[in-house]
Image (cartoon, rainbow, N blue to C red; front, side, top):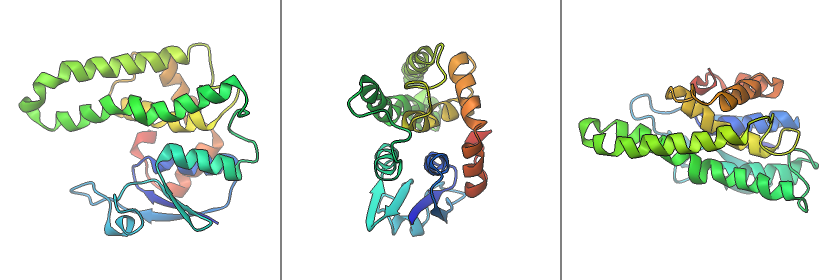
Length: 208
């Protein structure tokens, strides 16, 4: 059985959502952040030395990184669901979004969070960071214009991977100018599988 090492308030939420969409049986191992440092506990570091989540165990393998996990689960357990045919043009677009979410879109949002903790020392960086956040959110918002999903006419792993971006943007109060993206994440959070994952995970502030 698949085992998910789930860290509260983390990217592993979307892995639980993926498994619920596929209707797979899985075990959740809960790990709780230190309330002061927000770092993962030693129990997670024992599984993955970086102490990052998500991590899955399956068939003797330990796999890290959200995009890699989504790709792995869909290839090995999806039965042809949640990914376009590998020979189609949509497959290339699907791969683009899988990599873009963490490779590009999350960087300015993370910088905003960390530089914001520097107070006045970080002030010179704020204009560039805000510009990059707007640049990326505009790109994503325009990509969803007239669409219900990032690729094709149905949910794919690309949607699941991209979900963390608007969740973080919303938590930072930066989603108001991007109506397509705001509406899209509301629809994703209304899906029964997403709600079922939330029940498995416990509180998730980014799902509010």
